[in-house]
Length: 164
Image 1 (cartoon, rainbow, N blue to C red):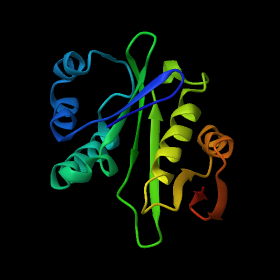
Image 2: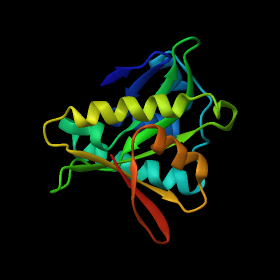
Image 3: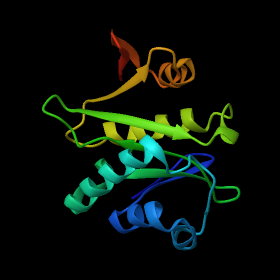
């Protein structure tokens, strides 16, 4: 599954590609003809990717709802970040989006561009009526991305929830 924006190719990794991301980035770079310079696959982020990999393997016919999507800059085929839907649509027609960007690529509008495109793609799917997101209370950059993409804050507690 591939979507495009003006500057990015959004590539949903299949189960085999998710395994390569965890275990053999050079092989994944060769397969996708790209250079990975986004977030390091370590710590808590690695645990998230491992969990999503299992879900991708268990749901091969709709892997894009569980997989990570690489944000590949078209100009030089560099992976600047990744985004994911944490699961398929729930009973309310909602899907939750998450995302991260390599530090050197921040403040260039890449994530706003990618989130807008992924939300448009998701909302075009028949079972999706809303995209939701959660941010930390103090994560103003992520909150600004969501605001630019048309999300509205729906509740605030230990974190902030948003809905498009």
